[in-house]
Length: 105
Image (tube, rainbow, N blue to C red; front, side, top):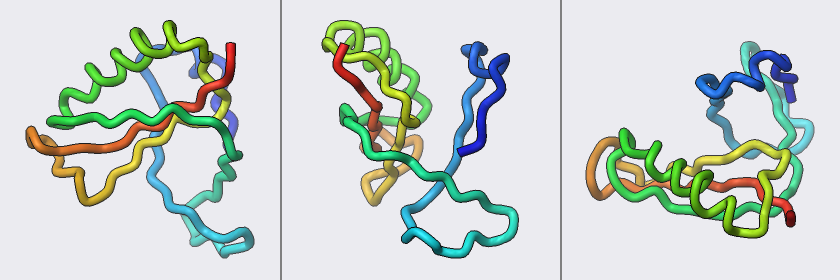
């Protein structure tokens, strides 16, 4: 996984976003793409329901509400978002899953 420079990790207004899919080990990587290995970890699973423009509210509830009270700390693996047939963009009936890596405090 590419290392994010220390200065960028401290900025609260930036994040690294990537789209990906699971492949078997040894699968050739097309030109212009990268292969990231995401290690197995414990994740807390949340569902964002509603328009995508309101995802910040869900993230606030996770990181500002649930996580501090949960007995867990953020883990070291990336946060994952799963978009499937339930995702309908900026509509009220849209859903996506958010998986937050968590370790026992």
